[in-house]
Image (cartoon, rainbow over all chains, first blue to last red; front, top):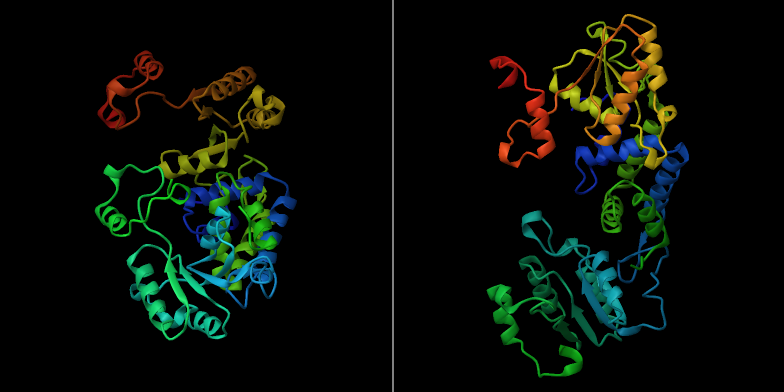
Length: 205
Length: 205
């Protein structure tokens, strides 16, 4: 595709760096910004630059925050004896949206993935161990992806937390609410049999 | 969705202004930029700001350009006696990609659309008339959308160009290459019969 302007071409090229954005979408974005007032583009870029410069990692849980310690870690209303281990901040937001969990988080940043060259030293595992070592933690809950990489990570962290007197749990896997049994995959279905729980109207239905 | 940071929330809000970008995509873009080096974000914003400030409308054809007169209008290799009338710059790029047309363009900016409050004075129709009036134009080719709005626009411009000694044509409508006859819509199929052309291996197959 030949662009009528080098400046448009360069902006489109930059925008295609965003995940899932192709040349067509990027051109659409560029033409939208060109159509609107200059101040729209200025505000757009200013907010992105401010975010990039202002947002930092919480020094307790490694989630993203505007402050040194994030609002969850500094809240007195949260249960500071529980830590939920997640891969990234999107997972924190998804769990927060359920309003079901009132403890703290620990954001690993990634899961162990040898194929991508991500080992245990690239995730915040030793920072988690340090938090547990500091005391006051009663339960560590794994909420990592149900993939081989996620399972490897849970397995490894479980191993390095063994010396400590802390309960280690993992969120339930099974048939998703609204799914048909016949369409569930074999592994999920057999796991849901293995991990069946006492029937209880409040939790299960 | 509750954001862990006001700065992220503001940037996401700005990015959802882009056409077709929802909150989830915008958050994905924001997290991508936060993950990469600060210089990536700076380069990203700089290229967009430079584009918004540098790109202007060609004063001949109203296409977008880095210069006062765009590269097509100022080229000596193009046929300056033909003008192809299009809605926007994406159409120029699509037609250029075919390498089938060697004349000039005229970008209307929009088509007449009373429902959106866009009338004849909001498009560059009188600028087109001025170009034809100036002389040297032998053919005006309509390549507008095959919608009611596009047809209305072609109809209107055809009317105001009547006083001038210029050939007015419209690009062919019919069954798209690769389409099955049985799946063509009725209007297209009946038009393709009305506008049938002498069989000629070079042009038609």
